[in-house]
Length: 227
Ligand SMILES: Nc1ncnc2c1ncn2[C@@H]1O[C@H](COP(=O)(O)OP(=O)(O)O)[C@@H](O)[C@H]1O
Ligand SMILES: [Mg+2]
Image 1 (tube, protein in one colour):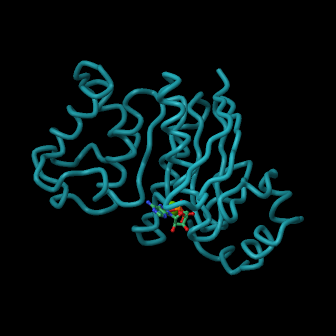
Image 2 (image 1 turned 45 degrees about the horizontal axis):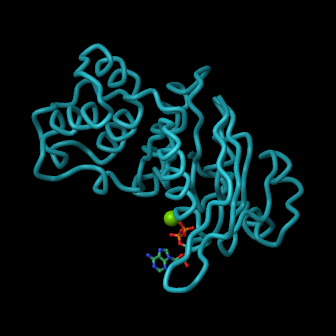
């Protein structure tokens, strides 16, 4: 079923940081939310999650750094159980094994705390946790910017194959148009707290209309990086 929000907005310290925004997201859609730093991408991501949660929809969020999602004092198995409990789900070893295999973390030692795993494995674990409840939408906010480019590309490849053919929609939030262009079929460009341009990825890259989209797509050196 389509996800729909309307009139999302946000104000901080008397300043509008998100102008009224409405969105529809189809099952299985791959959308990139791009824009320069401070344009309001994370604000929109959070507002979207809050609104969809209030509607009773199942939405998951992957933050920029695994540090934001993982408590350094808790074991990896604790985190997993806690995520299941938060979703009201019983512990399901088969589901866990399936997601661990899909994200290639099946050899990780769950008794360890996050720092006993590499950063790349931690972020794949966080992505696996986000998929526990088979969400209708997974929002990834700069999910690979804390990883080196090769590890980042590998992580996105694994996520692509997990989502492939399923109904979980993906919103990839990034300041990096090159990263988004490789992973999504539609792009939304944010500038100053609003979506100023929406287009298919190919159209936006070839015919950017707004200044915001033009300046993002003018840095074409990103074609040479792997992720
Ligand atoms: N809690 C806050 N208080 C005041 N300003 C904020 C707060 N959170 C975000 N902002 C401002 O809102 C704007 C958008 O921020 P953000 O959504 O984080 O942008 P992005 O994710 O695109 O980098 C920025 O100018 C930022 O400084
Ligand atoms: Mg942000």
